[in-house]
Length: 215
Image 1: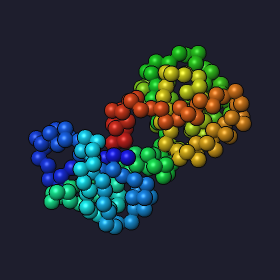
Image 2: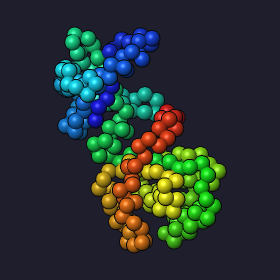
Image 3: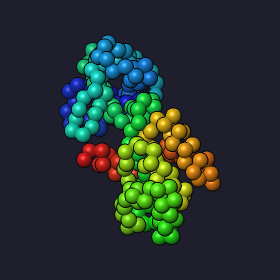
């Protein structure tokens, strides 16, 4: 996983020029699996090419409102630098812990598909999960806690609505596989491709997702 690196002190009018430099730190599993504050050395890439190493210290997790960030502070070429990666993205990238489920969908979905989806929920005793998607005229982004039942509801929605929805289910791979196996036992006709779709949301609704996380 690559994360932007910023100088400790960067004037606002220089941020755009700094981003154009495309200087990133490379995070690996051994770093993020142990959050104990300690000395670290991170490879730095500029335009995708190795330019050296950030010599510094893993600070750990910092709370910023509702969000948590993995923070590393150090120096590069004698300049104080800071790396801050949103923990939810780190946890998803390295399959470290279950994180919330997100479903992106078109603003309008066919009413007959809603009826089929609700019938699926009724069959599984999950009628109360119909509130996850709201109503047919609702917005394009839904969020739920990473439980098996919520994952079931989202998979059923992806099955019924097809390409009109995309999934970004943040559960660990083992959790996803257990939940999907349990669902297949109840509904054998579900295609295996639904499990593969569980992380397909790249490019869908990223601005909406950032706004939701910031609330």
